Image (cartoon, rainbow, N blue to C red; front, side, top):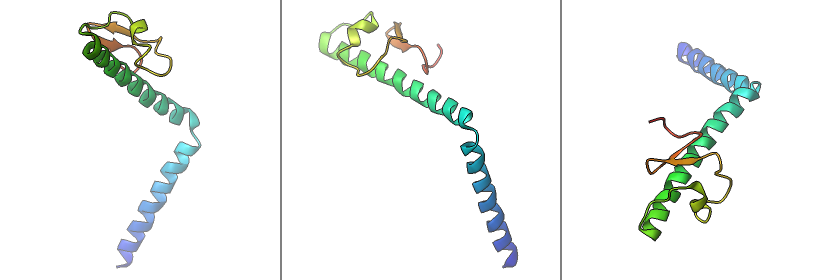
Length: 92
């Protein structure tokens, strides 16, 4: 039984160590947060494209056409082949 307790304590210590490393490495944490935010923004633009298409019967050709469908700045994005292109978007 003692071996299991030691293994559990080691696992907890390693876990705490990993969390501490991330806390002491804000650049890595910020970088990961930026990747997630970019992916969410790309998804938002894609959703706006679909919304525009549903409301107007034609696909948008410019990001400017989506201003009423998205809150926030999407100026880093463009529409390529009917889908969002820009930060966080999958490369074709």
